[in-house]
Amino acid sequence: MATSNPTEVVETLAAEIGDNIYMDIAKWHLYLANAHLHTLLAERLYPMVVEGKVDPDRIQEILQSIPIKLGGGRREIPLIDLLPMQCQVTLVDLLEDFIRRL
Image 1 (tube, rainbow, N blue to C red):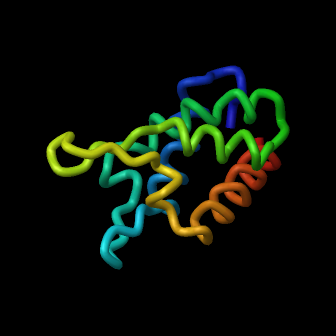
Image 2: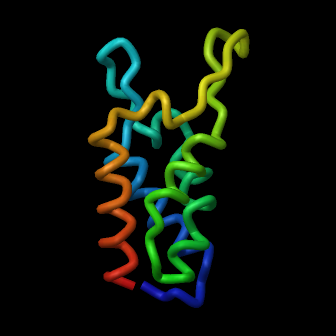
């Protein structure tokens, strides 16, 4: 994978995020690709890819900073509150593996 092409890197990372990370809503797994959130998250995580260093605290901050509108916008919940802990761990592992493969 060419790190010189940021768009390609973000798209590849987004695809991996979209296929592996989900929101748990009433025991339903809504994968981030289906929720159209995978690219946004990949774009926010991209600086860590460039640095080649995964910062779990920074990932938590990013997840906290992405608002998810519910009920037609009547409520807003941070993405981190909708991701099971296992998905948060998987996201860190996925990002570390992604950086290693670059």
